[in-house]
Amino acid sequence: MTVVTAADGVTADGWREAVVRAAEGLVEAGAAGPGYPEACVRVVEENGPYIVLAKGLALVHARPEEGGLAVGVGATRLAAPVEFGHPDNDPVDLLLAFCTPDPDAHVGTLSALARALSAGLADRLRAASGPDGLEHALKEALPDA
Image 1 (spheres, rainbow, N blue to C red):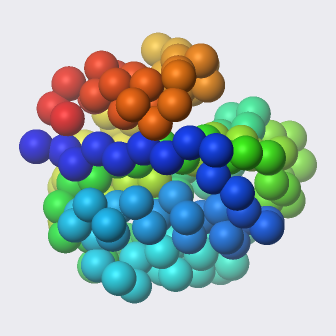
Image 2: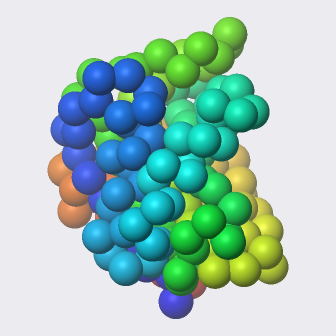
């Protein structure tokens, strides 16, 4: 069972705060440990803005051993977009954060998110009304949630 979280109208001063805010939902829901948000920031610091997958969309994550306690996916819609430094897909207004307890679940969750995104999940999230609408769109897109 996937833990699903959603936050809308989140304010962030830059990409680091946006990543932390997105990952904090997973911590609050019990799907990730307290160090997970900072681990997600380190992923971008060490590897660049590759997590910005599409126009305005970032996929926030870290390795399972860096705090994944359960399978969790969260949608965070920002009040104002932030720049990650991606040459094509900035600025980011929508963040999907995910965590998993092991590498197999990590690959499975990533695959499920990729399928959902190719089927229009980002557009449905942007059109959703408030956090309940965001959560509903995520649960619809991820049948195991």
